[in-house]
Image 1 (cartoon, rainbow, N blue to C red):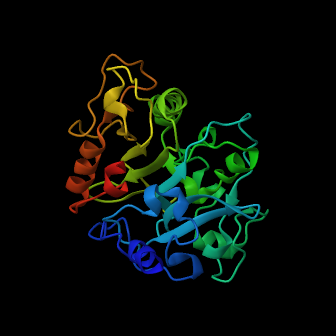
Image 2 (image 1 turned 90 degrees about the vertical axis):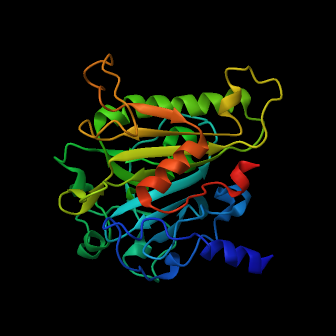
Image 3 (image 1 turned 135 degrees about the horizontal axis):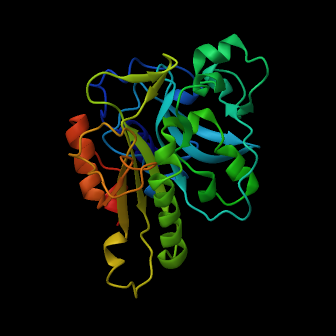
Length: 304
C-alpha cells in the first residue's frame, strides 16, 4: 500500500513545465508530496499529468488539522490549484483574517498557516504573496477553495490564506464565477449522496505572463471540476449530465479570445466578458491538454 501511495505522489506527470509561468524546483519539507493530506483527492490520488517538480504541494494546516490541499508555485506567488471535499457551511462567512505559510519562509518553520504580522517580515515578502501585492491592483483576492464550500468556522477561516488565492477580476469573482460556486453547492445538496471532491485551478496566459505588482501571476482563466461517485438514482434527465463529474472554465480577462469561453453579449455590462462555460470533465481535460500540451487526468479512473 505504501509503495502504491509513493507512486501516486510522484506520478503527477509534467503539466506546465513548458510554460514560462512556472520555474525551478522548490525545496523544503512541504515540497515533496501530498502524503499528509491525500484524503482531499478522489481515491487519494492527486491529478495525473501535473509534475510536482517546480511546485510546492501544501497540505493546508490550521488549528492542528489539515483543511485542504494546494499546489503552489513560490516563484510566481500563486497556486495552480486547490483540492478539497465540499461540505456546506454551517454558519456565515468569517471575518477575513488573512494568513501566510511559514514553511515557505523557512523549511523548518511551523506546519500551521499563520496570521500576517504588521509590519510584514521581509522574509515573508520575499517568499510568497502578501496583502500589499493586491492593493490598488484592480484585482480581487480570488479563492480557489471558497469559504462557502467548507463546513466549520475553522475550515472556512483556513481558506483565507494567500496560498489559496489568485488575482481575479471583480466582475468574475462576484459575478459568473460566484454563480458557479453556488450552483455546485446546490447540486451537492440536492443530488450527491456521498463525498464531493472538488479541484479548482487556473490557466495562465499562453504567451507572456501577466503580473500584479511585478510579483504575482495573473491567470487568464479559472477552472473547476467536481467528482461525486455516489449520487441519487432518480436524477432528472436534465441533471444526469452533471454526474458523477462536471466541470467549468471561467474568463478572467474580458479581452481574451472566445475559442475557450464565448462571451454573452446580452449580459449586463458589469459582468460581460467574465462568462463561465459549463462542460464535461473530458472537455475540460481536453482544454487543459491543448493549452498545456500534455495529457491531464484530474480524478482517478474518471471518478468511477
